[in-house]
Length: 248
Image 1 (cartoon, rainbow, N blue to C red):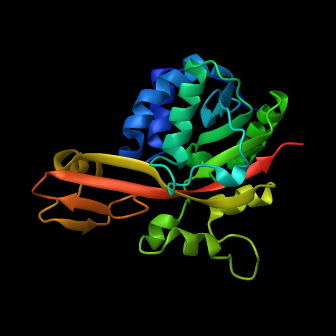
Image 2 (cartoon, helix red, strand yellow; image 1 turned 60 degrees about the horizontal axis):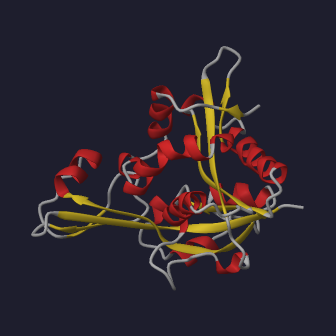
Image 3 (tube, helix red, strand yellow; image 1 turned 45 degrees about the horizontal axis):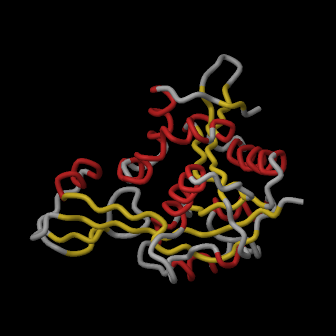
């Protein structure tokens, strides 16, 4: 059972441990993390074991979206899309007093020792329950494909089109789970996460030394890091996948 959870240092550590260091240090993420618990506390939830140990957390944000879901920002017509867009748009809507009508998943983290026990699916179900409880028309999610990092050179559209052998279900486990729980795939969201930092910082995050300009695969990265040694900068951008759970 997922219950609302307050922001604490231990929760922050738990959440950060579920992501590659550079994702946790996404500038948008760093600004938004404490705001979620102040602006949207009812959508920050956790599940604990019988002995009180943190097993999983789910994080979502409400926002206003009146156009068809097929027109969700995809990086083609506007600079931001996907994960970064959802986070910033939800905060902007809150500050301007716009009435939300959609819930967006932004993160689900499961403790390593609890993985493989169906908690991710239970988390998605809980978010659908919250969306229905609050009268929202849908649960959307700019998914970060869980195995895209093994196919860094593959276009996101090709990756989405891959199927699990012997089935008509998506190859990617995270996308596949959402589809099995009733979601439909809408389209890719290009440059869902964008992070630019100094090469020293990237070395600190990844353990990789950057001696010359070019493309570098990095641990946990869905796409290669674009390195400019002369500018002392590494630019990372990765695409996501929009899925939508319609709420009856």
